[in-house]
View (cartoon, rainbow, N blue to C red):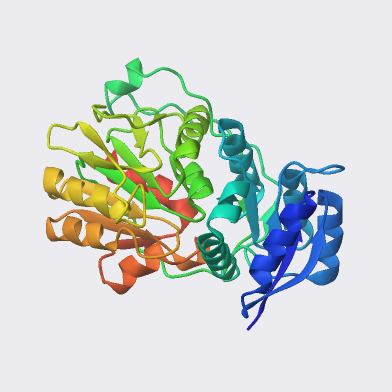
Length: 375
């Protein structure tokens, strides 16, 4: 079935190039273009595309505002184009919060220099997100989130020394999706590490999970999100502001500690040794993912045996499956996000199909289950 695409950008050059690249794929049809956010909303309602590509900076109405309106009126998977700058990363993360599914760097030089590579990547993204759950899982207005009651003092001495963190910011909430089988609540265990891997849909998914954790969460956390190098610092800063736990982009030599989540830097690989120290290594060009979930999971399996709780969230592909296999062989626990709450049911599906999942939970249940399992 041909995927219908609406291309939105105020640059005539970029609109033409994106349209040409997509139209060359027999599985994709460009059904319309728009030059600003207001036109994008009108065209989305009139043409009912399967996917929309969206720029951010446009006259009359910017891309983020357009995405919010589209998600309210005719939910459609949106692929954002963004600049490879710190500000571009911040804007892109705002767009993902507003409901966009995924993003690609907007790099005019790459379009001229590597047309075949750009064509392949863009078309693969379009075809993949056309099968996402974004259309089915519509958005409703976010409700304010109240700060939780203080944790009991018996939980951990860390609670009394941790600096106060803000209550979680409200995120767009999904309307109820078709329910899927869920595993029973987990049993408590003294985990030495929680490791979470994700890709497409991951930035919002991680926010949903991590904002449910108290400041005195007793296990160190590592996060592996497929993301360009220019984006991970901004994403870590965003999470740190939203969460009660601390979040930072991992650096070589960082030490794991309770109440701290370390985000693998984009373009590199993150490993953990038995002393709880983080090693940041150059990204290997032979690996598709930089950072790679398998690499971090594998090092955790070697260093911590059966004391790891690994969670695989929404994302394309199967990264994390082989690392989860090593963790499982060592006696560690593996959780997978359920299909109904995933934007892309790829990485969690790979875990489930390989019979590696000890539990399958909806996205909104994972945070509270982490608290139950670790505290």
